[in-house]
Length: 211
Image (cartoon, rainbow, N blue to C red; front, top):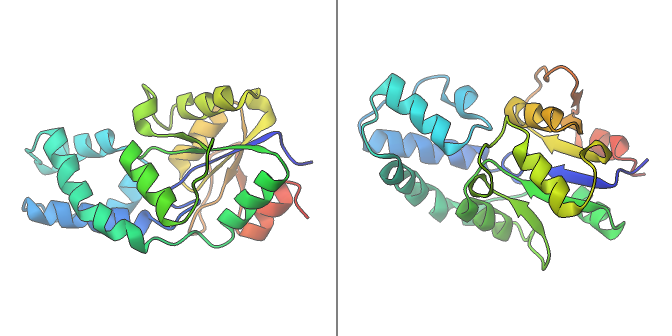
């Protein structure tokens, strides 16, 4: 059965932006003389900007104020955003659900200017579209607030909604919000307990009741 609402993560789920985020982060780190750690990707996947900054400050000696640091990272990221492409199959499913009248929202741990830039780059923007950025909530993922806000905006009970996310951080937020949660990682990995692990767009279509 098709759910009443589907709430999508953005980076890595709807758009293939994780490589750009990593490239911008690496460039920003090099610009301040910090060698990127080998496990950088695993440590920052799905994590909001402030906790990433705290990790870099506390463990690697980043001494810029947060505002100066994030501007430096986004100065590297935004020129690359126009090269973004959708994750194969994701936007097609989004548009199919939209045609069926299913409530949807994009729920991201990224800042508002990144959400808007990314969705514009892949042509996923229309009047009345619901988007939640890190700036719209007090606590980002893995806390449930971003997904709960999406449910409130869509006017649906969280238990009647599906959360789709490529990171364990995001999947944990969907589960904490009481939603049926699809964990759709870009590379095979074990999901958090309670999440449904998805390995392809076709599997996702099936779980969402699409034929």
